[in-house]
Image (cartoon, rainbow, N blue to C red; front, side, top):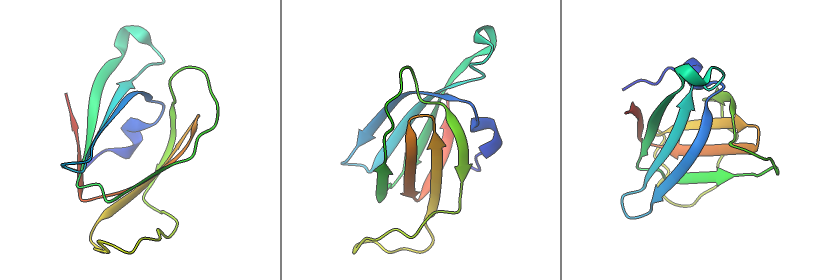
Length: 108
């Protein structure tokens, strides 16, 4: 399923769950958090994650997604160099996240 990247902008990242056994990353988002009465909680599921890097900037409260880009700096790794995998660089108010994964979908 294709993800509408624009719909993720300004979403709050409420929770991140990693499952190393299945290489799955679940990110719980609060969409439309600007107007609390319209806020929706959704999960973004990344499958077969082979790279996950996060830089952190101290911040109070939940991180907010500022930008999502498929243009990612070169990733150095010596395993699973499958060029068909997708990559995201996610800029948030608390730092930068870089992901390499096979697929992702927005679930309820």
